[in-house]
Structure formats: structure tokens, C-alpha cells
Image: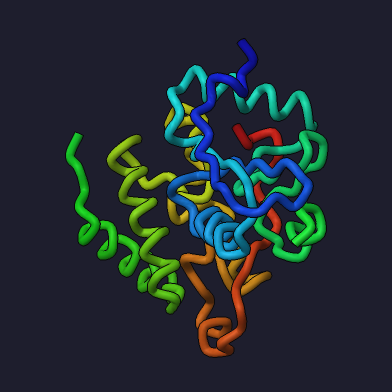
Length: 101
Length: 112
């Protein structure tokens, strides 16, 4: 079972932008909340998870997998587009460009 | 472990700002998220872990990012606000400038 199958992602059924959009966030963080609210307002189809709410073993496995895959520090919100492009931090222009907003 | 109420966490934030000569971000909705986040973290971990950073799983691993984090002074000096945008410098506060994401000053090897 891949780590991604163990994550109870929250799916937001908006309009597809033609990209697969995943957001890893912290439930406690202001910019994470702002980013998720922004995608909802733009009616983008995406999925997200609050990493800090995951059980410690799943959380560690996820973080190790993300770090090994993308070679980037885990800063939040952590956006993955099409499983191969990453933006860390909510920089709206970069998110718009990658997601196709 | 004693739990903190949201009210106690608000007092903590206000005291930190006063003690450091900072201002609390005037965006009340944004700050409420951060205060709730700090409160959640205190009640989870037993200390005010920065709400914008994940725990390393131990106090030792988190010690540089317990609010106010060791990076806050430099960030407030350089960008006008801390990494979370909870605390502002008085000048940034007075300027009315828009706050936003700033670079992470924490060394990558310390990020869990």
C-alpha cells in the first residue's frame, strides 16, 4: 500500500484545471488556511490534508516520501501539481501559474 | 499537563508583543487562526510550537521554533513581520503594508 493511499485526503469537487492539485497543510497555520480558502473560492478541484492531524507514523512516512521524491524542505502550505511540480509557501502568483488559475 | 484556553493564549500573544516591542497583526480573522493554532499546539505538545511549522516529535527538535521563535527578531527586522505574520514591527504596523509569505530562515537541516 503506497503512503498516499493511507492519507485521508479531503477532496474538493471544483472545476478541474486539467491538473492534479494536492495541498499538504497544517491545520494551525494562517497561510495554509488562506491558500485552501483561495482554491475553494476559485472553485478549483483539489485535495488536501492537514499533515499535523495524521498519526505520527503515517506523518513521518509521508514526510520522508515527499522529501525523497521532491528534494525540498517541508514548508507549509506545500503544493504538488501533477505529482511532479512543487511550490512551498503560499505565493499566489506561483500557485496561479502552476495550477492554471 | 495543564491545558490552556484560547483566552490564555491570546494573553500570551499580547504579552510577547508587549515584551518584545512588537505589534500583533491587526487582521483579526488571520490572527484568530494563528491563536487557535498556538492554542492547539500547546495542548498537543505542552509548549507553544509555531503554528506554521510542524513538530519534529520532541521538544528538543522543536526548541528553535517555540513561539516567539529564534528567527522572529531577524524576520521582523528584515521583512516587518515574523514567518507566521503574527507579530509586526511597529513601523510595518504603521505602514499598513500587505503582509505575506516570507522565506524560511530556519536552516533546512533543522526542518523535520
